[in-house]
Amino acid sequence: MLCENITVNGNRLYFAGVDTVKMAEKYGTPLFLMDENRIREKCRIYIDAMKKHFGKDSFPLFASKALCFKRIYEIMKEEKMGIDLVSSGEIYTAAKAGFGMEKSFFHGNNKTDADIAYAMENGVGYFVADSIYELSAVDRIAEEKGIRQKMILRLTPGIDPHTYAAVATGKVDSKFGVAIETGQAELFLKEALTFENLDIRGYHCHVGSQVFDEDGDVYLEASTIMLHFAKKMEETYGFKAEILNMGGGFGVRYTESDPYLDIEKAIESLSKHIKATVAELGMTMPKVIMEPGRSIVADAGMTLYSVGTLKEITGYKNYVSIDGGMTDNPRFALYGSKYTLLLANRMDEECDFECDVVGRCCESGDIIQPEVKLPKPVRGDIVAVCTTGAYNFSMASNYNRIPRPAVVMLADGEDYLAVRRETFADIAERDV
Ligand code: LLP
Image 1 (cartoon, rainbow, N blue to C red):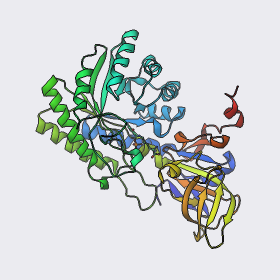
Image 2 (image 1 turned 90 degrees about the vertical axis):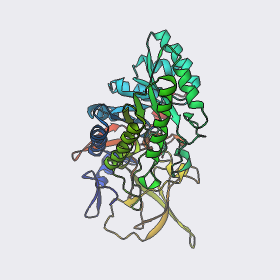
Image 3 (image 1 turned 90 degrees about the horizontal axis):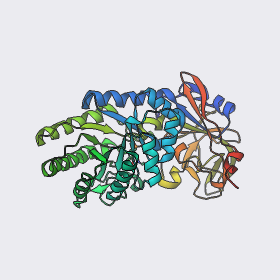
Image 4 (image 1 turned 30 degrees about the vertical axis):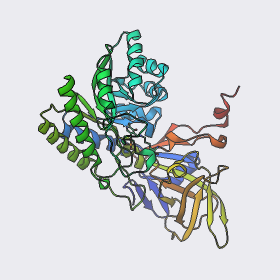
């Protein structure tokens, strides 16, 4: 199976040891299921590996953008994770969950004055400055608030991972960060050091998302470039970077043909490389931070749908329509992402019916996955889409005024609601 939390019992699909068909009956469809134990296990893998290989001050941040609701922050707090935040909405949600903000990093290429003030009021630990323009705004608001804001600078090391274009963010021409190659990163640091209310602590880079070892050692390469830059800045301006945040991006398995990435091993090889480079350059070892999102929650998630109609176009193709779609999973529509689909109530039958599994939106591009093989579905069957824990719930929309699904957590064989299903009234609530 794709992941060890997916099992079969008779004709039934089980997820995290729970009968998925029972969950569909109990909570309705479409439905997001989240395997809480798996999330915790992944947090621990990162925490332990980073401590072991980088040292006790090193820690991971959960990239909230991958999955954001109150319960997630409670789990992150219990697991002693830090968090990466990209909006005031994420800050609001984390604060509501009682997440202590010292270990939070606030990203974003366009933080408004209101965002900056809100983050400071909530005690966000670090700002990740994305551009030279941000510096003066943060400095001004920090002065108003009488604080010295800790900050790291987001740089683009000019690395091109072989992932899909929409998520390759470490390239020189990215909308994020400041390029090292063009000399602008140096000016960025030089300028940052002139502000009295900014406490510059180090650097950040993020090469991209859904990146595997097989893509070449992009993290190693990026860290080499970052450390050489840091060394040069040390020599030129006497600035010693205390923090090196290497971003997120480790890939996960969406299909059986995707490679398996061993997180601990990847961290170990990155740490060996960073330690060797630091030694070679005669620098002090920085506190290394990473920001995984997808690899923490993706395979802890599964979406359940009910089959509605079947359309067989003789001599052409077959469509199976389900009761969700691009409103709860826009990833095929946006990136052509691959997924594994299963017929949760007929797991013992042969998958001999090829079809496109499509959503219910008024849009031809509303496809969950084309060319899927399933037992020929009938109305009421339950389709499960695996590996939907990252960037599905968080990217869900109300297109066609479709309510967003509920999120049910599964832990130790028990189930509980983390986010209730949206209602029509919720959707229309703000209409005046
Ligand atoms: N740090 C930064 C600065 C990022 O931009 C991202 C992801 C992460 C960390 C977490 O990366 P992860 O470990 O999750 O790969 N919506 C797209 C993914 C966008 C990723 C954006 N940045 C998708 O559905 O594939």
